Amino acid sequence: MEIAFCLPAASSSQQFIRDLRRLLADVAYASNGPADSLILKPPAPVSACPVTVVRLADVTAPEVALDIGRTIGLAGSGHTPHRVNIELADLADCLAGNVGRIDHAGVNLPSQAVSVKEWDSLVQDIAASAAMYRYPTGEQWPFVLPSTGMELKTDIRDFIVGREPRFELVYDPWYPYTTWQFALWTKLTRTELEQLFPDPVGIAIPGLEDIFRTVYVQHSWPDLEIRFDLCFRVDDSPSDWETGEWLVKQGGRIRCRAVAFSVLDPLNRDFVG
Image 1 (tube, rainbow, N blue to C red):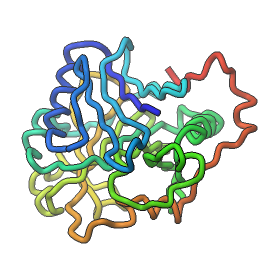
Image 2 (image 1 turned 45 degrees about the vertical axis):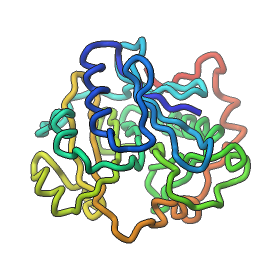
Image 3 (image 1 turned 135 degrees about the vertical axis):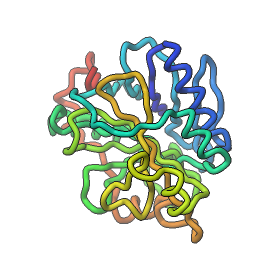
Image 4 (image 1 turned 90 degrees about the vertical axis):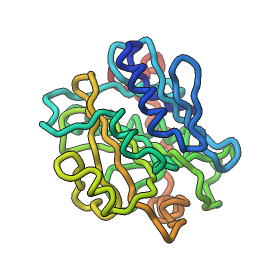
């Protein structure tokens, strides 16, 4: 399975990917692909999927394409909040040498624009082709953990560091537009990140302020926010979050319900866009 974050084929998109490459230059499993693309292949276990890609595509607006026949376009619309956003190039400069891994990439979809039925259909389709797990505290934040073909058929029982980047979906009740998110493991402490990105350039998301600091980046696409969650250095690694054990044991696998597919038009599997 491949998860592709697709950008319109334009010079601004090319620059975005180049800056993203610089930001992730020290990530061992981030490699440059053809035509200004970036490939993020899980380092463990061997042959784990999905692979995450950021690339140019023949699209008019950003979208996430899943090679199971689903496309996640920009759901919702409206003015994004007035924020002090940072250029991605500046973010890469500030974090040079301090980003070693990518925890996850994700898409937040607005509940104001996406019905429960549409959301459930998307989750079920992904769960049919990937190892997807509920978020243990009950929020609608399911995660895909990279897995082998055998683990997809059975379940993940080997809890190791390297099942990354994960893929997160968020059913977002707060904002009326789509957000792309990228969570990065950094070598910096909370104090260091707060000093690098003080308010209002960096913000703390309530309830998650002890885990990461968030910055939003500037870009040229309407109805979309792109944020980077900068995780604080963890000295007692690995945690059960890093190994996936917490999601697997406390959240539980989302299993595809066969009935979910009876209402889908096999000729039109696009979600939005």
